[in-house]
Length: 518
Ligand SMILES: Nc1ncnc2c1ncn2[C@@H]1O[C@H](COP(=O)(O)OP(=O)(O)O)[C@@H](O)[C@H]1O
Ligand SMILES: [Mg+2]
Image 1 (cartoon, rainbow, N blue to C red):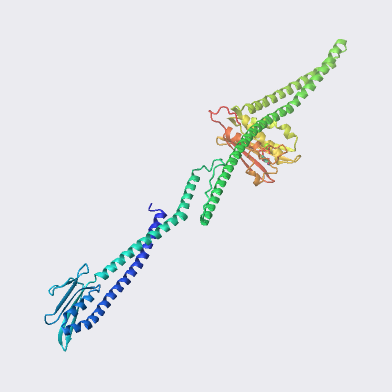
Image 2: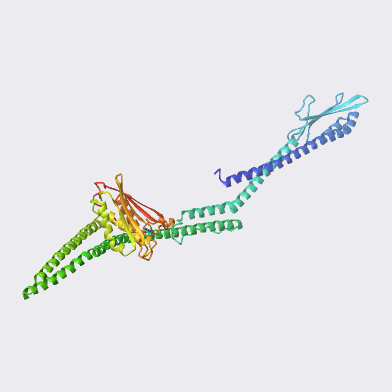
């Protein structure tokens, strides 16, 4: 209540009115008092003059009747309370005005209660012949002043009351009731749920009659509309963002699926390459075996027919025996070679597909892996150098390692050199404390700095559309860091070549027996 504008304005307005009206009333009151007082003084002065003239004759002639009549006539004066007149002898006239304005005789001994007294002495040649005392009362003018004050106060009260209530009603009509209307409308708008999609909701404020208010209402309406529009926009944006997020999630899941399937494809491709390698490598000894066996078969048939005809000579038999010996030696050697090859490839293929941890000799194993890559290497002008002097026995995941080495060597063949370009790919392995460090180095094009930071990212390839998937190094990185518990790093200089370094523990922890890497 004390904080309401209405209360404050009432206090201010009535206070101001009170101050203005009181000061003007005070001024008027002072004027009136001065006037009445002057009037009273003037009255006294003129009475004195008049009595001095009119009573002198009475005293001179000692005419009591005349004196009485003069006094009585002057008793009409409202300020006079009583008059006493006497001479040196027995002449005495005393008249008193009662409260009811009746005139009664006043004893010489009695002095009435008065507010003012005037004495007039009549003398002749220094001899006093008469003495008059006039008793005045200020009551009449004091009463008039009091009445005036009361009237002033009444007018002031009426003025304050009427101006105050007029202002109050005017303010109510033009200020407070519009404010209240706005207040209710705002409260109503506040209760509405702006975020709901209910279009029938009306947030707008009512139209008000007066110019200033309608401007204000229009302004507030515009702001409310803007805010609700903004909120709706935001809602839409949120819905859009949610949809986008869902889409992104779906796309991400798709991507993961695609990546997984590509990883699988890449693994299958690695196996495919291995199988091709086996086929190619085994082809030679098997071919030789086949040729020698068919030649031996032909010679044997010839020998049988010669025996049947009885035309076999000793020299022919010796020749056949030599051929049979040489053929069986060749068949044995080549079959052995084929069997060995199949044995080693079988091990790599099993390792690659099963990811089994086992003990193996690193250098032997790397040699076999490089062997499996022979068909690819032979189709290029690139030489492979392999340095691994120590006997390093490891307990780790050979299949995983073979896949990493395969990827790195194939990358060097594909990315470091042009077709037919000569080059050297060097693979070296040596121990470092309880780790081995295997380096795959080429002297080809190298990798630019702007690309170097991205080559391990999935799907990063500079051979987009030309058979590159961008997964080879990512898979290699994951295998080295997760399965082999080591590190894979790269150093490269443009036009000088690249060096990939694998650093892995010789012994894998006993509790990680078999990992099916993704
Ligand atoms: N030895 C290398 N010499 C030059 N660039 C290489 C070499 N190895 C990898 N890169 C670069 O790294 C990229 C990523 O390799 P990778 O992940 O195996 O994908 P992809 O072989 O499918 O392109 C290649 O596209 C290539 O630009
Ligand atoms: Mg690759």
